[in-house]
Image 1: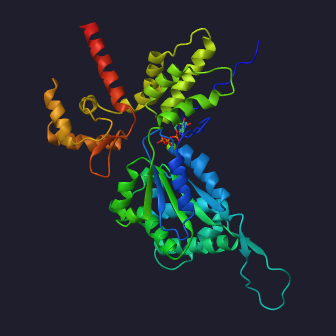
Image 2 (image 1 turned 90 degrees about the vertical axis):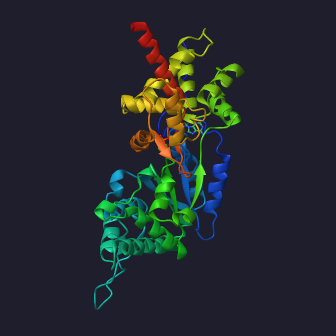
Length: 404
Ligand SMILES: Nc1ncnc2c1ncn2[C@@H]1O[C@H](COP(=O)(O)OP(=O)(O)OP(=O)(O)O)[C@@H](O)[C@H]1O
Ligand SMILES: [Mg+2]
């Protein structure tokens, strides 16, 4: 018996897709930002959960930058990086030291008298950067600027085209007014001031759409410092490629009708495409005679794998509120408090008044289900969430009927 072909599809946060489809515009735009003579614009890459931010950054932006001679450093931002200004500096210098450790400078010569040989070299390790940082005069922001500027001088002398500071999950950025700590403000101020001096650092922040408003809230000039690349659904053609390309060389093929069906159900969202394709392909391998897509089973699995964890975090009353939103015609676009109130008054349950909604929304934002967009309206932070909510309530109703 021949070996079973491996299922190539890769649903999962940060899992490289077998074929990265579409995103040509964003790739071209990023290319332009790398070609800036003076770095005047930094980049925000944003989109809902599972739209492909991480893989676009890792599989496309990074190799592109490196090919052009840029150094690429960075990691995920965590809440802890923004607890204090000191934490943020340690985060940046830790990531930077991965690159700088391979650089060295002549050690300062503190001896008198005879020259006893070539001066020793000093590597720019994390300890070195921290000692340099601590010995600088002024406030934290001055120390950070001085250290980064020093690193740039050394890197520039080694022909680096620039340094990209790439941070994923950057929606956690924040200042801590309550603690008198302003890590986000320091981050923005440092980059802006160094870039003005001609230092070729580019900040690339990737995260949920809540990110940009937070930057502007901290420093209004952030609006001018960043260009926003927003990614969402793949086009029809890109969806088709994402579905078909991975199995191009295998003996299996999706029929045109299946491709259409998968594109429709996934609505072009990359995570859902990977998920549905993987399940379908598995089904095909274990039931070679059955050429249909077991769509109901796949959606049930998707509900439990992707949505259920988020749904469990909300109370019954919050679920009712979410159901009101899901019933809006433009639930997948943007909505306002008044619109939610209006729908709730037309429905049979206990209606929501304006105050209820305005108090509940921040809680749902905190749970990562909703966000406030640039126009001050609200949106779901999870793609295809409204359809899931409808399924939950339909199921609930079905069960109520069964047991009454
Ligand atoms: N352009 C694409 N073509 C095909 N598959 C893709 C594409 N972009 C992303 N994917 C797939 O979609 C899934 C989600 O990608 P990724 O983790 O990069 O999303 P994300 O936007 O970073 O999500 P999160 O907000 O949860 O971090 C992965 O399984 C990935 O392989
Ligand atoms: Mg990600």
